[in-house]
Image (cartoon, rainbow, N blue to C red; front, side):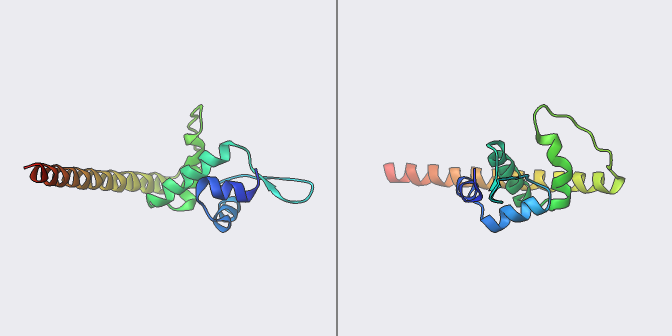
Length: 122
């Protein structure tokens, strides 16, 4: 698929897709005309990258962990450093705290909606 279709299917600007390619996060083949051509799995890869970026991970870390997200999952880090592992642990812990906060907020909103609906029934 061309970059425009990938952008539409993932809700990602073409500029960002080019950046992801430049950073080695996605790969495109080139047609005879020089246009980028992406395969179907790139849609999921872009969504993974966006999710990891939204979670706060920098692209340099995302590039290192993306192979672990593929199936079959083969975990191999020839360049894993103590600093990188510490960064991943800190990011994982930050994500866990964020997830807990989101769950508390979801539960609070559900409680509010339940109370409002009950009040309106009375």
